[in-house]
Image: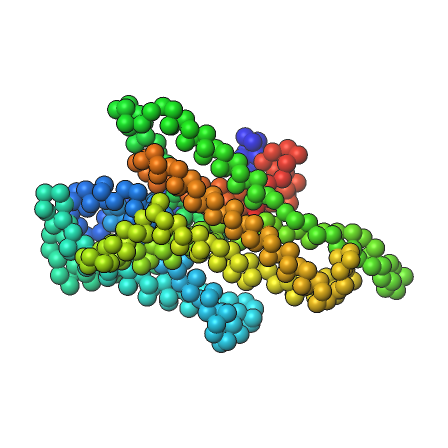
Length: 435
């Protein structure tokens, strides 16, 4: 393992990419500590101390603690993810956008540009709602969170938070292009990992004061390691469909006559479903937490992690996005046509439509199994951890995202090492991402 990390810095291109990504993540973490002007940080900290375990705590986990301090990166990357969800759904509903998605690289660039515009619009809406809600918030002694409320504060907050989200979006795109791994996923990963030292510190403090027993801490640690092991096992799981290629004679050469396989992953959607599901739930619920209307507040409280309504909506969105994202990323008809074009066939299945129908049936079953797996990993640990009243939110969603992004990034690094005749991270073992 140590030799593998040393090999990273022996390859100039890979070294440059890794250092670039680390540098961009460092910039992101610095921005998470630059406060928004016009806020009483002490009063705001007291408010968030009472919001532990709520949906605000979950949102703060994704922003890496930026929302709790209301820094310039308080909105995080969630507006960009929400905008991406909207335009991916529109590709199925709106024919003009569907046509763009099929125009290759030029169409993809246009959709990306529209997604950026949508991110700005969503950021403005969220920032305005947060700024209005902050003006009505008070600390435990009755002090105002916003000492000088008004449209001046609102406009300044909207500009600051929107600019922060736009900058994060740019950081993510730069990391994907010039760095290693997926930039947006790495930003979410950094926000989750940044909360671990604080969470461990709070747990040790409660252990010293006797509020949590050593047995509970050991149980949680063992449970988390078990969940991580399950995630790694399932993420590497595949259903391999055998593909036989008939012999073809072209000139004086004979092609085909070989047997290969088509790998279908159990979880083809990866960490996209929980991220999208969290974004969908958090967008309206975050606004509701800052609106002082009784029925809106009650609705927001029902969407607290651990409540039945939250779990039902969360699982429903996860299942929906598992099927939706798999349908977008894998087209059985196109795959069947490509296999037929190259003279291949699945034993016992006729080429063409029967092959595409067979692939669709297999993929539907795998997607269902993957959706159940993601739902259990994301919801069950959160419920169990909530029963122990731990002072942080680090359930299955965070573990799934952290482990999944880590595996994908490690797989990309290993591919660079192997293509340059270096051994991977571990001898005799290949790290595989979800792609």
